[in-house]
Image 1: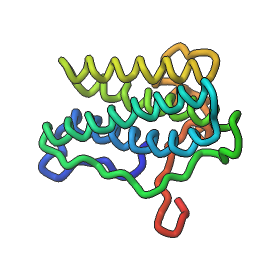
Image 2: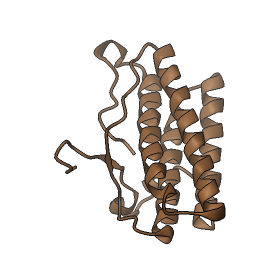
Image 3: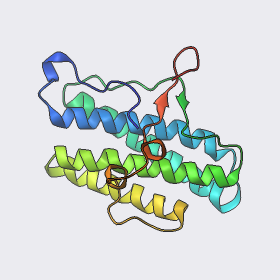
Image 4: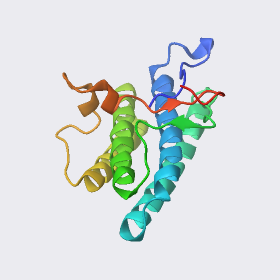
Length: 172
C-alpha cells in the first residue's frame, strides 16, 4: 500500500519506527480512499461493515499522523487519488477490494510491529489483528499469517502489490 515515498526527513533517516509509522499512515490513506470507492457499491449488512471499516481506518490514520508528529516527523500526506488494483463496478468486486485493502493494511502493521516496541507495538499488533479479522470477514476465510501473505514465495505481485497513487495525469 505504499503510495509514495515514506522516507522520513534527512534528520530522521535513522528511525525505523518513524519510517514504519509513515508507511502504515500511507497505507491507511489508501485504505480510506479504497473504502470510499467500494462503500458505494455495497448495501445492507455489507454496507454497514464497509462504513464501520472506513471509520476505523480514518481513526487509525489520524492516530498514526499524531504518532508521526510525536516522533518528530511530518506525517506523509494523502494523495488526491489512488489507482485501484482492479475495476470495482459491483458488489462482489467491492468485497474483493475490501479483502485486498485489509491484507495490505495488515502487512503495513506487521512491519510496524517489527519496528516498534512498548505501547506502539501493542497498538500496531491490535491494528494488525483488526485488519486480519476484517480481511477474514470479507474473504469468508482467513490466512495463516495475516500481513505476511503478500510476502510469501510465489505470491502474484500483481494481486498483492501496493495501491499506487495516481499522478496528476491519472496514470500511475
